[in-house]
Amino acid sequence: MTDFAVECDNIVRTFRVGEVRALDGVSLRVPKGQVFGLLGPNGSGKTTMVRILSTILKPNSGTAKVMGFDVVKDAESVRKTIGMAGQYATVDENLTGFENIVMIGRLTHLTKKVARRRANELLEQFGLTDAGNRSVKTYSGGMRRRLDLGASLVSQPPLLFLDEPTTGLDPQSRQDLWGVIEQLIEGGTTVLLTTQYLEEADRLASQLVVLDHGKIIAEGTPPELKAQLGTTVLALTFESLEDAQKGGDIVKSLSDKPIHTEGSTVELTVDSGPATAAEAIRRIDAATIKLKGLALREPSLDDVFLSLTGHTTEVGDVNLAASTSQVSKG
Amino acid sequence: MTTENYVSELRWTLSDIATIARRNILTLVRIPTSLVFAIIQPIMFVLLFRYVFSGSINIPAGTYVNYLIPGILVQTTIFGAVGTAIGLAEDLQRGLIERFRALPMARSAVLAGRTISDVLRNIMIVVVITGVGFAVGFRPHGGFFPYIEACLLMLLFAYCLSWGFAFIGLAAPNSETAQAMTFPLIFPLTFASSIFVAINNMPGWLQVFARNQPVSQAANAVRALMLGYPVGNSVWVTLLWAAGALILLAPLATRRYRQAA
Picture (cartoon, each protein chain N blue to C red):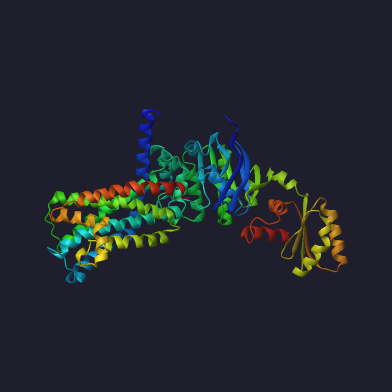
């Protein structure tokens, strides 16, 4: 028996007759008993990867094994060992929460009695007991995700795919769901998590690969990925966009990594924070530009992604924008 | 594989089909408006043709209401297949089918469960329309058992045809398109047929199509059985069409299901 929950080599998958290479030679080893994160922006190939591993799609080339079973040759065995909760919260709106879980349980070939017992247990575990007999139509987004997650666990699968579990949720529901997922992890379930939220990967995953345009561009633990950058991020906020541009040009040479400008804030990743900050202030002062704020902080995974790909995880994303604005204030 | 394994697999396949069919029926019951409209539409057809058009339609023999109701029953059961297309398109659109495809359930269960639950819905509509028919003067003289035979025949015919609509539902990008895609198929089949009018009154070129197409055969067979006329070959021809449709369309829909994502 293998120690890996997922082993895949050189997976290639194209769409529209080769026009789009959704996965371009991806190899993965997901160890059992941990949360493995696939991190990447929209269109990076995360969901395609999960769909291949869950036997919904076939790869064009390459091999993939899930719990030791080949996803193409032994798809039936793979389906018996996995649970899947998707970003679209694929629960049936017209059924109640209870009926949804029982249905998935029956279709995973649990007996009626066991399916019902599991449904009650899971509704309780996910705080849905009171809503269990209500039509899913009346559920909030967060409740649907919890139900979706519950349904995917009905047969107690050793491996769970979580495809962007919190995409589109409000911050509170996201925090709640993270708590729920953390409980699962403590129970020893292996989880393959895809996310475009770096904060989510940082919080939940112990091992990460970063995908961009169907290729793995980095892998490691979240601290390792952060260490690939300098140790500190220096954020300089200027009074105007124009000043930010001028200031950026002046301080650019202080870092050997690309600088990042967001509004009137310029960010550099550097090795020696205080010394670089002092030098930056001297240069900006000499150029008679006014500095509105200055902050030193540890690099986040946002910074990792930016330095690896040259673009942020998702342009215009509310949460990213929110975290960036906090940074410039701090 | 051992015999025991086959038996167990068959048992789970039937269980999967029942689970999906049950879920579809629950959905139908939970949205009463869709059920009400599924019944109101054929009632409107009955009233429209019985009272508005009947005076202008010439049929060869007997009263028009007796000619009409067997036809409307056939039309209604075929229209039921539009629901098959819409239902599958919706499941696909919502990602439910994707979820089903990652489960260790029988591959055939989603389509079989869907088409079977649609037969159950059709049975209910046939009962209601028979009642409405009697209320507006329908008096079949063929006897009880031929009437049941006629109902079984049209339900079977519609069932086999519904696999083609299942294919449409899986091929359509969304449920609205699925519905729109069924119309160019269903209108010529039901209106250029012997369902509402005698084919003899149509232009010559249309008669060729209308006389030979499967829905006319089904309507003729059902009408003959219900009214106690000689059925001729119509029952056999209808059964052949049904078998042909099933043999051709079921694999087509199943193949599409395997590919659909």
